[in-house]
Image (spheres, rainbow, N blue to C red):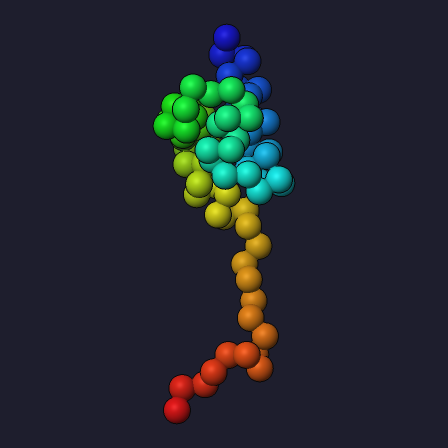
Length: 72
């Protein structure tokens, strides 16, 4: 059973990072009982919450310099 859960968590992690799914979407797609159960299992496995993992994997937006206003 542990093997199956680990595989589901690995696949959910890949979806969070590459497909940009939310934690709730990944929990539903990988058949966890609810997003809270998924978040606890995820954090136990990877030592980071799924939301934090997703945020850290997203590219940082850079704004064009000509659109940023300078302070007077």
